[in-house]
Image (cartoon, rainbow, N blue to C red; front, top):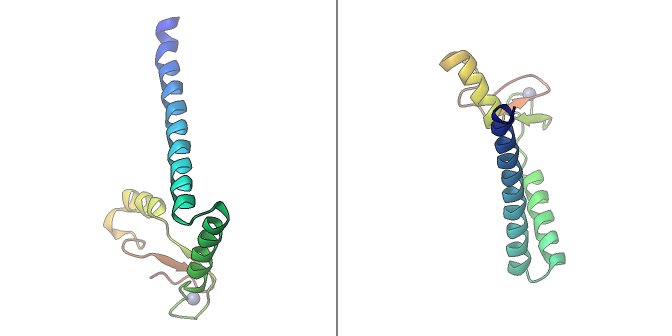
Length: 104
Ligand SMILES: [Zn+2]
């Protein structure tokens, strides 16, 4: 019985450690950011500003000019490439227009 359960227990421990590690890294990054910007408040403001900047620089569809676009994320692209090989239309393309469906 314990022979069957052991790998599962190890797996659960590994996942738990991984989650702890990710939380630790996020915590460290936050702490470093706060240190860099002096205070928690200015750090959050800086993060907010960066977010706003990237909103402003949001690319638009070259075909119809709509900003209603979505980023084709690497994972989706990876799956697409794995599934359809190099014939995939998503290879080398980063964005998809939700308005006209154009990808670039
Ligand atoms: Zn478009």
